[in-house]
Image 1 (cartoon, rainbow, N blue to C red):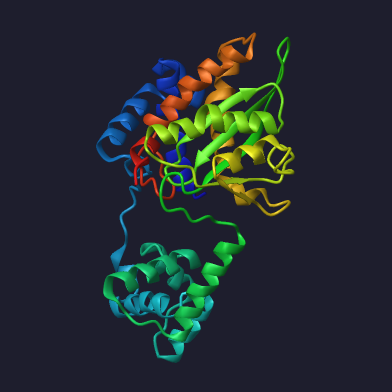
Image 2 (spheres, one colour):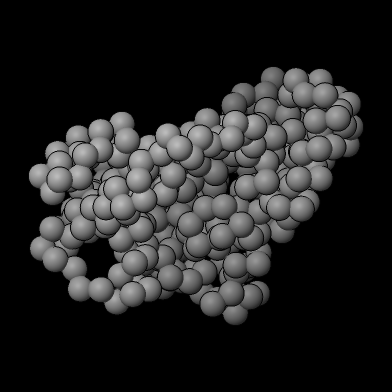
Length: 332
C-alpha cells in the first residue's frame, strides 16, 4: 500500500467512523483529526470520491529541470516495447541509441506516467493492445505470459457473473464470558462481493451446510440466480466422504461443484480472508467496545445490520466492483 493510499484510507476511515458513531467530535478525537478537517474531507469526498481525498502537493513542478520531450517519449515507448526491463536496463538500452538518461530519470518518468512497476507496465501494454490493436513482438508476448503464469501461481481467481464462484470460510470471532466460543461462517460471492455472515458456537460440517441452506442459496434463488461452484479450504467442516459428510452431501443435493484451495495456501481464498479482516476492523472491534453481549443472538442482530450496510451502502473499489456497492453488481 502506497503512502497516498494510506492517507486516503485514514480519511475514509474517519468518514465511516463518524457514520457508525453518529458523533463527528468523537470520531475526530479517535482518529486524531480536527472537525474542520472532517468537513473538508466530507466535502471533497462528496464532490470527487476517494481520489479527491489524496494529498495535494503544493510544490510546483520545475519544468526546466525535466528531461527533453523526445527523451521522455523514448522512455515511455521502451516501457511498452519491453515492460520487463528495469530502470537500469532501460537506461543502458537507450544509451545504445544515443539517448542519455539516468536510471533515476527513467524512474521519474515512469512515476509521471504511472508505469513504475512491472505490473503497471503490463497493464498499460494490455490496454494499448486493446485500444490500438497493435501486434506484439516475442518479448512483449513473453512478458504477458509470465504475468499470467504468476497470476495463476498466486491463486488469483477468475469469475464471470454472480453465483459463478462463491467462497466460504470459517472465522474464529473469539470467546465471550458466559456465551462461549463464537465462530463465523463467512460466504462471499467472488464477482459481486456480496457477503453473508452467520455466527455459531461450533465449527463442523453441519453448520457449514446450514449457512448455505439458511442464507446463501435462498438469496440467490430470490434473485433468479444459481450458485454454481463453492470455493473452500480443506478443513474438516468442508471436506469429507460425500455419503456421510453434511456439507459435501448438501452440495451434491443442490448440484453445486466444489473447489478446494491448495493445502497451506490460505491466500488462494484471500477474498474471504480480506472480508474477515474488514468485519473485524469495522464491526467487531467497535461493537465489543460499545456493548456487552450476553448471547450470540444479540451479536448476530448487530452483525446483520452491519452486513446490510456492507452490501447495500458501502462502496467497494476492488476487482469487478469499480467503486459500486455489492448489491448494485448482483446482476448478470
